[in-house]
Image (tube, rainbow, N blue to C red):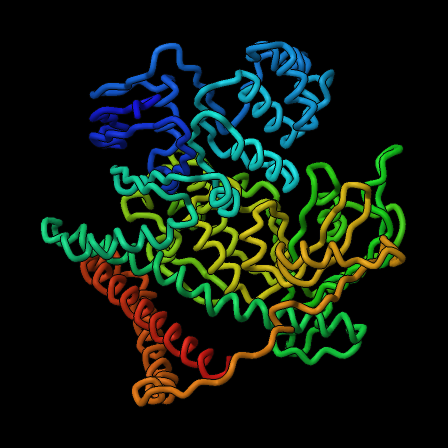
Length: 595
């Protein structure tokens, strides 16, 4: 089968360093490619190369004659703010009727001026302009950013039925799984190909790493250590999903019981505090309208310490408005909101606004000088802390303005978590984040000891993190559902017709919890021994990790002995990885015994 597009031995340097290093790729008819890689690895550059917008330093770009290629950039460029949406798309459309068709499908007002479009409307406009070109090949850079779930599902259906080929970069895992039949993975200036969709990526990438582990004698010692650290960090985070999801399911069950018991008596362990009230926010009958438009009909919410609440709904439905009312930035039209005066709140609606582009990563985290930051009461060296957020050491002293969008979000999150906070509010934190960084974000937020309120359109992210979801239906109605996105889908269809819309509290029993427990099985001698001994071994290893962290807290260690600092950092990563493995083993055995 002849390719539509090919890169043949293509190389591209950026700032003197190789960004693309002798890549050869072929895009075939009907290829539905998911392009993955860490932020800054060259994903957007690859799409620009395929579209012809980026020149190559060496190699060849082959394009089948008369091939129509359409490229969706991450951000819309507006040159005429007075122009209407229809006039804008007509400049790109192959046929005039396609412009109106896609604008209507994507719910963008045809006569609305570009300067009046919201962020979500701008994204849908850009998508309409791309699709209206009626291309043979689609190149989509983060098409789901700022889209609501309904629009994402529409795009999934359109791409699944697309007659041509496409390459998509997306942070939305569920979306990537649903639309792809091939995966390109950019890793350390190389690109690898798997003839299966993104659903196979975790298995495939771990297999590639394991193969590389056995065959990497040609790597020098430094690169081998860095590769080991990355492999263990990413793999351990993925494997920890089992234990993390188990805790989330337990917390969802606790929240369900609280709601069923009117939440007057709270006994759940993770809600316990010392001295302070467990109540963070109590909203009763709050409403909000702008002009003739009702954004929120009477709505009740009790937010307790330890809750992890997701908010989802169509763009413009009122999600951000609800958040602003809850944190006190906006007053409701009616109803009351009580807040715990002893709660410290961080509200990140535009995370990157907290960064100074003209300072280094180090300076952004330590604006007053020094080399340590305090994270949830613990002192951490800034280098070790930023390594936890997947930054390489040579980036830490580099300037912030050269970071990719996802790397900026990662840095902004790292900075936010250095501020004292027990109530964290995040408005679409997953935008521009790659798969590894999403794993990291899930881990960080799962371990966050306070209360979380999160707006997101990422279904997989919501499934893995939140204890309940507030869903906006687009008519001013907001409903709380216990559980994640899949729980929401099941419960939404079982709503009793006569239940008052404005105060619906869905408590349908979780199907998983309702299933018949599996019969207990007998353990082998080795398994029984591990189940008994692992808790003691994990306790000893935790003490060793604490000792290593104390040594790394020495403010002068990095300047005095960088090699010792690197050795201790590596040893700490090894010990944490070993602890992760032990925890996973114990969880598997406990699950085997208790079902």
